[in-house]
Length: 186
Image 1: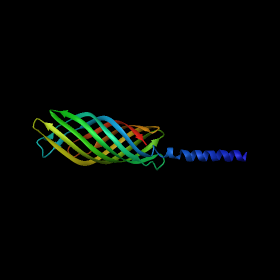
Image 2: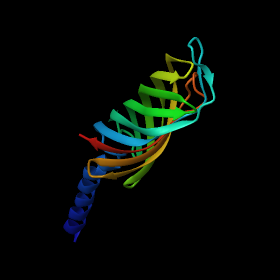
Image 3: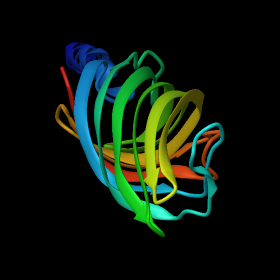
Image 4: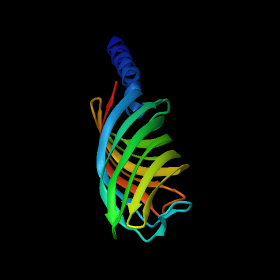
């Protein structure tokens, strides 16, 4: 009887230790992914160009490439870093055309509830935009804060994400992206 209890306790301890990495948030390690979504650009202000300030409301299909590293060192919590390349598409409104792309770097923190989880990220965006209108054209660029929130679902080494990102760009009243992404962790 004593041997059976010892064997049961030993089995539970080994199973608990073996399952420890799965409790450490999502998959730890490097990851890559792709995303697609809807971008939105609000009123623009290209001071110093022929275009100047324009009442603008445009949206288009956008995509992004994602790379990052999830440390996953705290049980049920993910901590990581991420870089993105974003193409916001080509928006048009009132004979004004805007195209923009950017690189972003984020710190990411998330909480997992089994295979599902939520996350938030904060970082910086290095963007470049081109605008053309009947009165002229111009380029603008800058580095501004970026924020995001989302939900995710893990399956094996894959992750499906839905997220909203807001970019606090000085030359636009609003620049945001609502997207869905597929992530693979190595």
